[in-house]
Length: 84
Image (cartoon, rainbow, N blue to C red; front, side):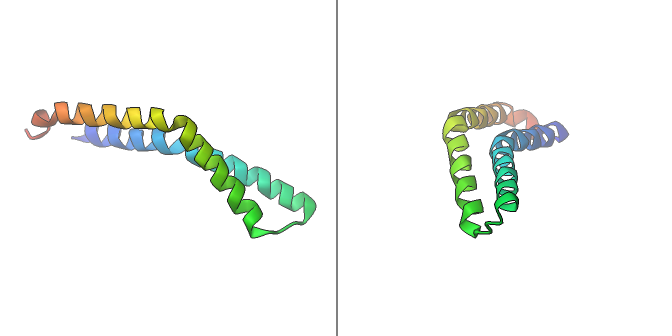
């Protein structure tokens, strides 16, 4: 059972990491820009992060879905062994 929990958490990390890292890097670049130019517009930080995260999801969405489907297939195949 602990192997299942470990695999589940690892899948969550693998699926969330690209989107979160893209948002983090975008936020860092925007904060540097805002600090350099003294422009403190809230939408300047929100809209680019949203766009970048959506682009990453569009690019990696099929890979993420494939990983999730493969995990579900493995989980359903091994289900009888998990009941013991």
